[in-house]
Length: 85
Image (tube, rainbow, N blue to C red; front, side, top):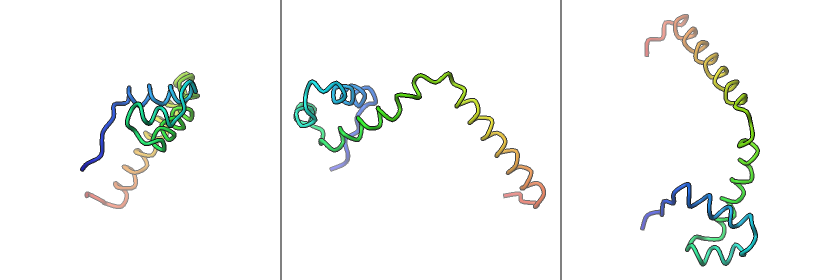
């Protein structure tokens, strides 16, 4: 028996229900047929990611610049060492 795959929308809805606290995690687990530990993990992931929802995109921009700089450095090193891989 393989793992069940849940949509990101369902995960978000369940995590929001857990955050609201109108039902216990045990009740949510019974309602959705998902283990309580999994619901707790989704709740934690949502709470950890919440501050990023309010960022202005500057973090992603700086991350993209850093990735681009690293790629330039890798290309330069490949050229200097004669790596053709």
